[in-house]
Image 1 (cartoon, rainbow, N blue to C red):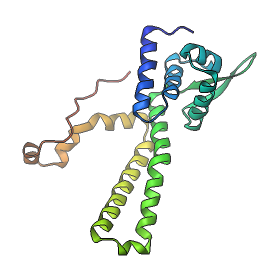
Image 2: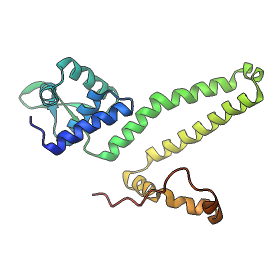
Image 3: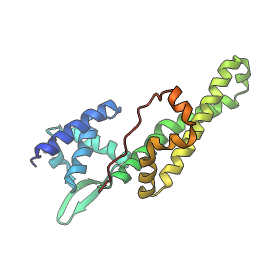
Image 4: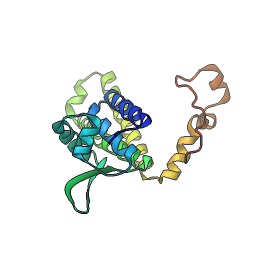
Length: 194
């Protein structure tokens, strides 16, 4: 399968971004290919298109299946496994957030809870105890917030995201905005999607 210049650039860039996000480049490129192609592909097509070794493709597909970012499908008259991903960017976003939360965030919260409940914590300095407990409180708050966001419909989530920095006007006094510039730049409104 020949990629158009646009598709090729997207797949290559997504692989580079995957590396920056801690994801294997091949894994990210395969997912990008399945996403932009929009049709199920079998492993040989993926390997030929991306010029990757079959073993690399096999391992990368297993990882994508474990992340629940792709699924196996079949084509009538063909015994091979085909792979596809959702074409719904919001579904993909929610899957990635949910999976990363389960793999990275939740274990840290569990450890912080365990450490906070450990009687030997009282032997640590008060400052260390405060830092540990405040970290746990922050992470529990963020975890609850992300769980609530994941329950929202894509349309509602999109509306919340569009509010962006505008919310700060309602929660911060006007004079505080002038005195203390934000660490984060104000995000311009997003153009309508679709």
